Length: 586
Ligand SMILES: Nc1ncnc2c1ncn2[C@@H]1O[C@H](COP(=O)(O)OP(=O)(O)OP(=O)(O)O)[C@@H](O)[C@H]1O
Image (cartoon, rainbow, N blue to C red; front, side, top):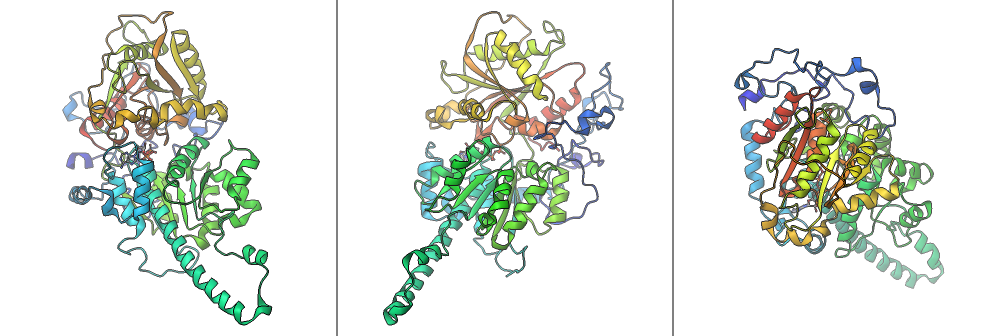
């Protein structure tokens, strides 16, 4: 631990926040976020102007020699020299982290979290119905009781004013079940509110009936009484979940919808992939709407014309908060928060990575934010292994695409597969840094007999859902999840020096998705156990998200990073070291 503390302090874009658990600080640097490129067409100054590439991510000189004075002996090097990483929880002492871990370890079932029985039943029979035994993940153990305010600690102060709502930041490692960590307490809260409103309405109706019986001349016509129903949620949802893309809207929307079959509430996802009529019908359903899952841009544009859609929002979730508070989204996300503030009970930010820019922003804008941070934030699970394939070695001779195709063939031919059955389809994701490369590489891989598909912002919305379906759908591996033996077996990985060249033969048992950042954030790629990092990612944050598509919820996974002489091998080495030690990537 002590050795981890002596790190470079100079901030770079490579750094994740060094202290994501503190509640309030003031810092000077509000740096450009590494997420700026995610939803833009223009790559931004970082990539346009090579002079602006920070030293930490700038490619090395052709010689591959570092300009730094890195000691040759591995043991003499300070940890994370190349990445200038720092531990995620520096101000949270080792003992505090251990204490938190010990505290969380004591909670071993969902019954201990304080959820209503009907919500628990929805979890058991619907959301995680495909699992034999249910155990809450660390983030669920931490966040659910806090959001339920079980101990009432966040209700104590009877605050007033537009900022009187509670603010939470849920930060936990990728694939750790953050969606349910915020959604279960929200559903619980909605049902509680509904019960209270029903009881109040019953009292009111009784009073009204009494009054009507006493004075028949004051009876309101029934239509007017209906219009004035203060509890109607038509066009006025009680909860809104914001996400950066329509793919994530669909994914999270499905999780929420599935539970509404058991515990009754109305939810809908709306995004740019829906027609105006569909959006209108879902939002203005005469039976009401409790939860809406959407993107900031769509909600904002609807709110321009129909400000009332934000008038009843008690719970507002900003999921993938690092993206939604990035410069490309920040203004619009904040506008929604401000408009919803008068009715808001809880603002919940959720993220797998807290870059320094977000950390600083939260401190300035939401100093009272309650931080719910798991001890393993910013780390990649140890059950994910990272192999390195040197593309400069024979027989690739610097041909990255060929090395990639070969790696896929090797994985495809390996006897044991992702799902425990020899004949099952294997799913491999290949991440590239630039969108243009995705198409080019897909064409190349197809020419080598590989079933490859590109997924980028150029892919039509209609196709994106269909493409992602086979990489995400838990139903495809459902049977296997109930049999834990299958998820614990060794993963074959034997990228040897090239022995067999891909030819016109077809690799029939393997599906490959070639994608960019678009496929790396939040997408629940349960069916995937292999990821190839075709390019060395620009930032550690990208490493966390891309490798975070593997090893989700205790599964095993294998990442392969392709490196050539122009790549920062020292960065790759440090990421591997950190993964091996189970340390956070900062
Ligand atoms: N307690 C649990 N036990 C087993 N599986 C769970 C549990 N909670 C959630 N899951 C499953 O784990 C998977 C990952 O969950 P989720 O997508 O919420 O992760 P996440 O933390 O949001 O990941 P990311 O940071 O990549 O967005 C989902 O398929 C979900 O159904």
